[in-house]
Amino acid sequence: MRLAGTMNIGLFGGTFDPIHRGHIALARAAQQRCKLSRIYFVPANVPPHKEKHPIAPFLHRYAMIALATAQEKAFVPSLLEAPEGSAAAGRKERAPRPNYTIDTVRRLKQTFKNSDRLFLLIGIDAFDDVAQWHQAEALFRECEFIVGSRPGYSLADVANALPERLRPRAEATRPFQKQAATGDLVLRGATIHLLDQVHQPVSATAIRASAAAGKPLSRFVDTSVADYIKKVGLYK
Ligand code: ATP
Image (tube, rainbow, N blue to C red; front, side, top):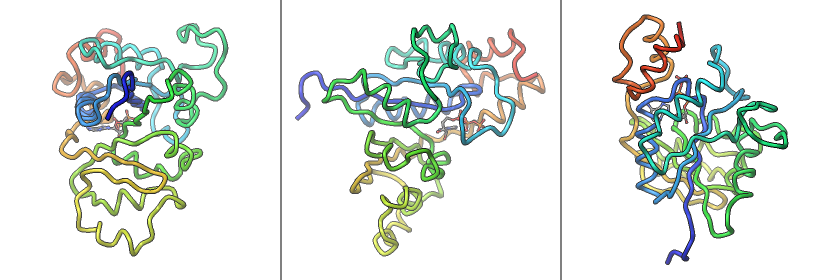
């Protein structure tokens, strides 16, 4: 039974450089599967574990999220990881070290009622590294995970990606090796909802390359985002 007023809330963090149709597809599937009343899209300022290329300024990535989510009532652009001291953040107090997911999660949960549940949205490629994240074990205690799966990943891969102390013993996951990464994985200390068939053949890396080559982008990103990239001259 669901208690009156209980809300399931999603948090979707990423570089979003730029936000694309793959991200939106994952968010829609997560919303349906876990009955999320809202999903916060949180562009990262400087992701500590991922700086493979020069990243577009926070404001541009945020603006594109605002455009791409404008038609979806439940999709909310978030300034939770806005750069410190940024006027754009509109906060009176500066948030300390806003870049670790655990900090963002705890900050968001301060606004929650006790009965609210938080779900972290993530693609399976990113989930693969989760054990290396800052305070990974604590993160699994703070929220449930919704993982956008891809063909070729097994349930054992998902279980083995967990932080060591939450990882089931090898004997226990052996039967998982032949099982596709679908359904729900409920373990002591970790709850993971797997979404299959959401992954789209879209990546921000390929989009930046297309933009640099002057190719059309509207197959990969919302038309408003494609127009923005062109107008502002991003990824040139
Ligand atoms: P890049 O190509 O720059 O690495 P990315 O889109 O993979 O970009 P992020 O913007 O940080 O990287 O992605 C945010 C989240 O969205 C991550 O959890 C990632 O796994 C997931 N994601 C990325 N692309 C897809 C896709 N096509 N379908 C579903 N999820 C995706």
